[in-house]
Image (cartoon, rainbow, N blue to C red; front, side, top):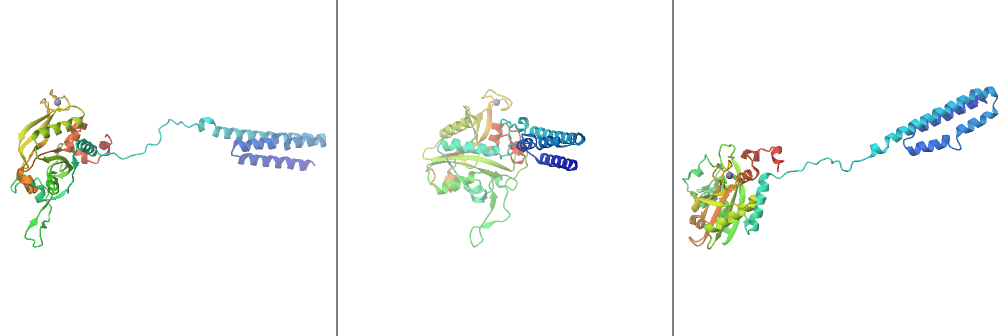
Length: 352
Ligand SMILES: [Zn+2]
């Protein structure tokens, strides 16, 4: 009887300890508590059955049963506490206001932002956006915009010429050279050939010049050009459009100043300045105390250009003007080196 009781106690203890070790939720430990220490506890049954034993046997089995009960009780308590600390509110708490993992999204280049700003302002004034090829023929890049064959702009020093000339006809007697366009003016003539005035267009685009780079010069940059052709287009129209555009672009009322200048495709030609965006015309370090900032070139479209496009001489008048988009972006965002735009340095782009 005694040996049987000993085995029963050991077996009960081992089974209980195994079940406790395997439990991994508070629900399971609670079930085990009810099984081993509830109303129908096997330990209670064992202790009750001790009454059938002799006094000597009771003294041996009693403590054995008790220590087994205590051992199981302690194991269950330890397991319950371990599970409670694992699932307690502190560790389960989620801070819903904590910032999440930031996803890296792309950025528009400041040049793209500026180009879109420009396009938006001009389309609101009724301008269309025109586009043309970046690899251009010598005719459209130079001849059609009144740049004569001996003009220094055609020099190898200034222009990227394509290596192979392409024949204009099957006889191969007359060949045409290709260039990376040196200005967006080539698109003017392409547009004129296909359209009858009146019209107003803008031509934003990438252009190329063979020159040494420095803080204000790049071999690849962006130009922006506006062209208006019609019956009675005048310099006053240019002034009004330019003033409206620059005031909207910089978000403040700006004045335009014209200075006589020469460009082959306009007559008369002028360079134009805007009142300093920094000091408003009083004079500061940005404008070298002059109150004005140089922006670009403009003029009334040369009749030779209109004739090259197929119009009658003196049938229409028009104005054209252009400037570098990098320069405008540099002014707007106070960028000190034009080479940043093409550097590919993400730290630069991320600022916009
Ligand atoms: Zn100033």
